[in-house]
Amino acid sequence: MGIRPTKLKAFSLQELMVVLIITTVVVGMAFAVLNLVQRQMGSIESIYAIKTDVNQLRRSLWIDFNRYAHITYDPTENVLQFSNEMGERTYHVVDGTIGTQNLEIAFKSLELFFDNQKVTAGEIDAISIRTSLETGHQEIFVFKENTPTTYINQP
Image 1 (tube, rainbow, N blue to C red):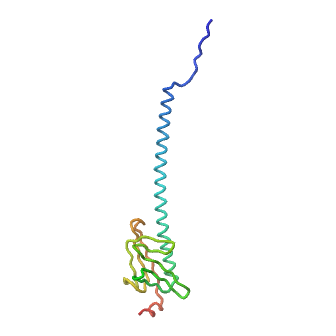
Image 2 (image 1 turned 60 degrees about the vertical axis):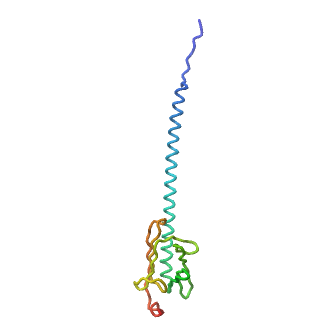
Image 3 (image 1 turned 180 degrees about the vertical axis):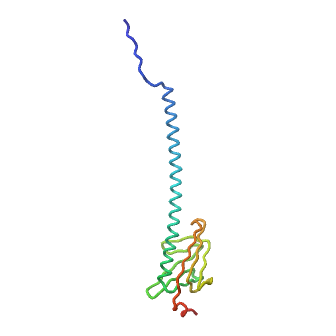
């Protein structure tokens, strides 16, 4: 009696190659989708940062317009000056940007108002800023109510 050869159950080399190719395609697609998601998250993050900066400027201007009694714009120095008896604060308006030391926003247009009239210099009581394309064309409009001393101090 001879030894009967036993057949082992196993995969053939061709079957293993097919599984390897399918796995490579699936993993490649997963990395491609992950790359797209990461790019999308990066763009969402940058848009959020820009909107946060614009909202921070809006809040800062709103607080300063209501905190300080005198607000003037000097086009020769390119500064928006806020002042009262307690102190002062300055915003620089240079090369299409407005901001303070910590925050600068690019703008497309800037309009200044006093007593519902557009002005280019001097005392103001409202400001309208239209941000640039990079900051999403947002509009910031901030105003204050004038007190009688505002009109008394006018030249």
